[in-house]
Image (tube, rainbow, N blue to C red):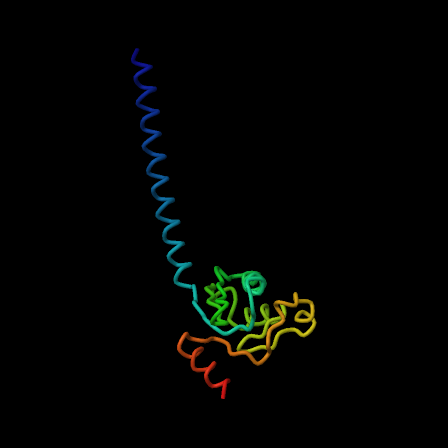
Length: 146
């Protein structure tokens, strides 16, 4: 009978020990996540394009860069919001990836070969405004009508 009680106590003690270790692991993970967030950089810049298919191609190109956490291209404003780890990549690498897919960015002209391979609906006007705010977009339209 005493042996059985000792076995139960030993198992309970092991259970408490493993709980403490799990708690430590959670703390370590949390610390790592915080330091990752601190390295993240948010960036917005203009990218020319027309439609939802453009959106997919542009975002896929940006997300293909190692270190990019998220990319969201706004069809109306011709602007992409990118969040990336600046210890793994930089803004120019993202511009280059998007340009290689055929799309002009504020800093780089799109690859002419890739542009020619885009679907017809995605072949944008190379003079279109990029990185527009809602107000600026309205002003630009009125300016072009004169």
